[in-house]
Image (cartoon, rainbow, N blue to C red; front, side, top):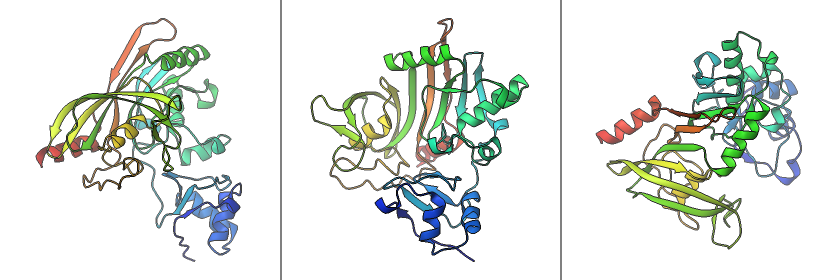
Length: 322
């Protein structure tokens, strides 16, 4: 039996029901076993992420898609391939590959170790990599503590806290905006060096997260932009975060008229036509290239940099050649 289904948006009547129940209803009543096989085979996507939990309860307006073919794990989504840049009893710094969620969806937190291995997050991969380096079982070492995250398609440097002290002290540094975070990105057109400051809200008025002109509303977001290289029809930018709001760089550049190449969400200014991305970027062209902070236990200044990964490097070279 071949099961096919057009992408759909979760209706109010479907809210709170499990993914398996809604899929079975939408597909016309196949067996529960057939539905579970679809989910286990990585053929179901919610938003931009594969969902392998048939018991996940759906929320209103979530976009669900049944893929024609199973989506394989990213080639780098294996603990032995994860690059650990720093490890001590308080912190671990790793190089996040694109295509991997930083942390797990709340509905998936109770998954078994075996199930996590089928669809690992960066948190999982890092826990396993740390256990391997320490020659211990992952369940026998302290759980990682989240202090920041990158979007699924964004690559680059990420730090996890490994102690209560590190979680508290790093959290304070992030709140005080003293952590060094610099990103490389490619945008269409020519954009000059500047600082973009705005107040970000969940809905700017058109259903998208973005900036508002209403006074005393939203959270202040500040992005410092420098030009790394001018390409033909495009610009390679360096973006330093002063604040770290959700999707801040993507929103600021999109609202400035230069959406990040490969972005499928923030593609237009407010009440403007969507930008036609002709860059053929391999994915979201955003990379966390620099990370620095004071060690939470001894205040030593720590700093790392990571060049563009090969997919984005080849993308930039192609634009350079054009």
